[in-house]
Image 1 (cartoon, one colour):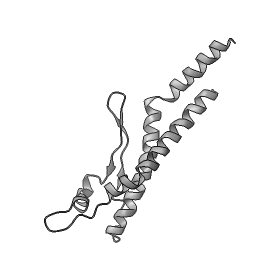
Image 2: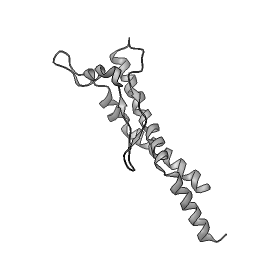
Image 3: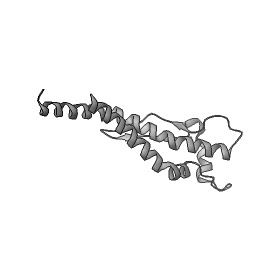
Image 4: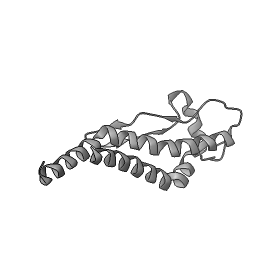
Length: 124
């Protein structure tokens, strides 16, 4: 096989590795870092709540983009009052601090997940 053909094959494999489905998987892995911290923080606010108030949703896509949502589901929407506070209670944030503290780590997880897929594809 000609070296140029080998190089073309490597790039084709890399292109296949960076498909939207792989980016979604990497984004979900990254979001899990933040979700776990937010869940821990929620349990500090409400130790009696044994349910997982913080739900990780599937990554949606809008024409070659990925969006991951972290937060309570529709049944548990009232927990957002703890995040922002109300006229009768002060805010006890758990989502924003988790993002602020774990955002960098989540970005590293995303990059590492995608890097692994690219390396596997390059090996063929």
